[in-house]
Image (cartoon, rainbow, N blue to C red; front, side, top):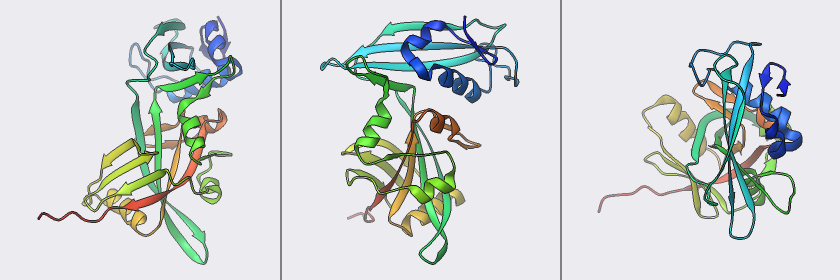
Length: 256
């Protein structure tokens, strides 16, 4: 039974994650705040166990997909484990998780220009393997194909300065009623209804109206909570991608 720092894990996990196994184990443990068994808080340094469910599927073209779902427990509540099952090739039960914020950037003589940000990820993580190669993130692969770029680090200031515009196939649309959508190639990935009377929502919408792009921060292993955004794990695993997505503004709808 391998143990990385204070986290015990099933050795069979390495056959799926390969050289990324240790980083995966540490990221999963650091992102957990409560024991999945007893729900008590996890304290720094205490012995933990990682349990991982792997769902394998095969697309009609022979591409093998792997979905990872993990949880962390006190070692006294559960030992490490790995379960493997077969599933339909089309990934299902994927849940979008997102957060919005407004950053500022000094550029072109404009001090404190507002930059609207949409942080977006999907859980659980879905990866695929072609021709016996390494596992590749399905979400990251799609984003890179449409003009996103890998972020060099988790620093938001550096991300704002380095980001480039994505392909025209990527759009963020915001209508005057507060409906926000994020689409790639005509496929809707995320939608949310903002409330203009909410100060935070109003600030984000105003930042969108004052510019031409939304900074989309995406990929796997983003830690998004009501308390903030942690990009360190995604950056460490090379699954953090960024792109300036052009805003499509919808005209107001009037009752006729």
